[in-house]
Length: 296
Image (cartoon, rainbow, N blue to C red; front, top):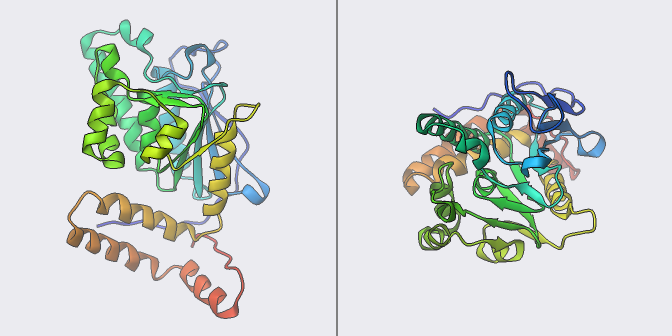
């Protein structure tokens, strides 16, 4: 049975650092490779995961994967989170994909274990209860694009470069790319992009439907982040439980036949009926005022 249990919303927290235990970091000695921030003021309810591994262009190594998993586990329990944005602290890069230098030192067995963890990370992102947005202001290649595909929505700078380029490295997408790209673009186009390892600009990705929005890059190199934040602000005022249940209905329903999908929608709708937010929405409509949703 599908179930989303509403709980009291918590207050936002400032930047929080995650450090993977027993792993060496790419940056300064012991420095974490991601930061998590809850925005305040009118943006309260928006949280961000900032990837910051400059020497490796945010490549997905053991440390970064561990920190992302820890951050997602923590944020999952923070009911204050209404939208989660994935962004980069490295100019010109979103995520360069898997850390092939690190993987080169692994045995075949270790590679299998790591790829399984990487696939698990993407599944955790996809299953995150609140809407997720990838802000791609630079290169998003291989596992970097797989991370973005695991998000609900994607925004790219027009100058961004993205693609599942694994076949050019003697590999194939192993963190969900062969499954999520066809569901996003259709089978034939996904096969073409994976078989060729083609790279797309933000504008090309938008024309194909791979990203929701493409924006001209600015001097600071963070235009996609600002557009993603604007998109998050559009989601923010909506009833959070209804939004989360809508995500469940879409994600579960798309995998089954239409009759089963309608049944899933009915289960989700039934769970939303007893919420205070539904009553608030009805009252606001009747009184001709903006609703004040609290997530209960």
